[in-house]
Length: 310
Image (cartoon, one colour):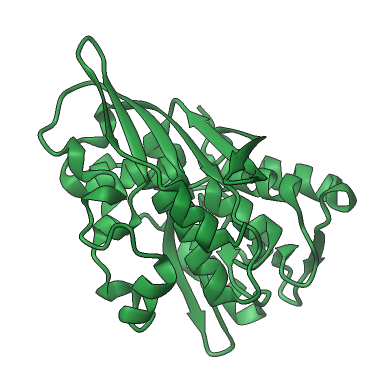
């Protein structure tokens, strides 16, 4: 199997070839790092969000969309399926890189994390990459600066001209699509946090609504998290049983049923103050090979209708 960064670089090349069709723009910084504006100053779109989600999962997941009702409205929903959940969702898609310089802040996800490989998940899986190019998807309301690209290059051990930074705002169509694509990742990461061996997770399919674009980054952050915690459904095929499966969905959290805008405000928007259970998917079906298939949690359409304003 090719390395995540190799496959993601090929997808980035494809996105550049179809930039006009995707509503994105590619440009070079003065240090020759490449930024792709997927939804900051340029509109992006649903197709851009689907392409970005493929990039974030290192090309190891299929990403599709379809329409489904939320209340009286018909909204796009995103489905992500992978038979390589540890690599695609934990080692690539997970947001684990806080990119911060004097002139830029953003949250990074994607396979460039595997070039650094300092997070706990990489230690547990014994996985790291060494490759000439690195792709880090950046969630921010501004586009990366030279200093930000230099930081990525230095941490990843690659040249600045080998850095690719697809970037999007949370409050964008691309941002809403990318967030909806994270349902499976949330389930797998919750299992990892609870102590389940990620090597025993064989396949994952996640499904979630695309939240209508909000009028600010903070409102979009709340709305997209509502989409996952109250509207997502995940199917996970695993090797062995576990006595904490019921703790995976968001219903295991004491604040379940509270809109994320209220949850974030209570924590004064300090995410480190929030319990990990807040970020679980709404409903999870665990299918144990040769064993039982059990569903935990539930979706909450009434809360979604209120959150989305539909």
